[in-house]
Length: 178
Image (tube, rainbow, N blue to C red; front, side, top):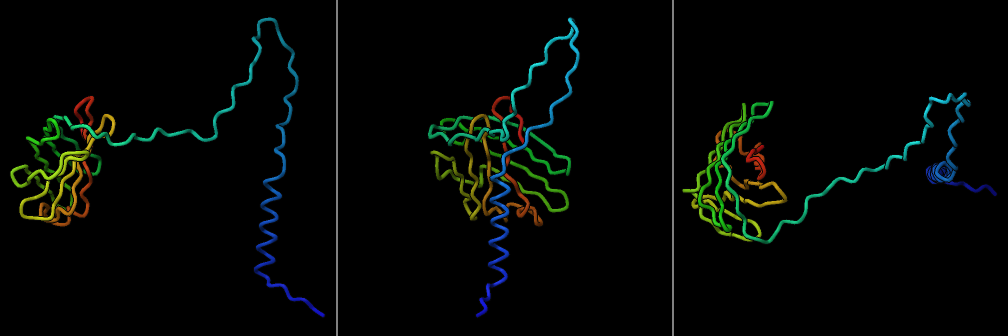
């Protein structure tokens, strides 16, 4: 009697066994360095502490549920030519000034003005809804940064700029944005 074992299952089992065996092998110690003659002036060498294999990145904290207060008037331009100007004033989660002009090379530009929006939300995120369109602008803080994001704002932009429109980040510490 001949037993036929499927090839895929056999190869899978062999591969799994090889992987487990490789992980179970103890690490080999590095080769010992030859002993040096010490001189009285030479300081003893102490081994450095091993570096952590995984550096922990600091994650941004949660969005606070307090009234947003921010004032900024900033401009930026990146190496691709993408540029923006933002004027924003929010006091106790009420927007009193909002203007944004974004230019996206070879795509078009987008323009936003508070006159065309009404505020529909204050906490935890400030929200501005366009009066005649589906466009929504959201403003929130996370740490030292304030984010201004744009959603469904196709009619505020020329060309295909709306498809390449990114949020603007304003830094509270120095008033810059990017």
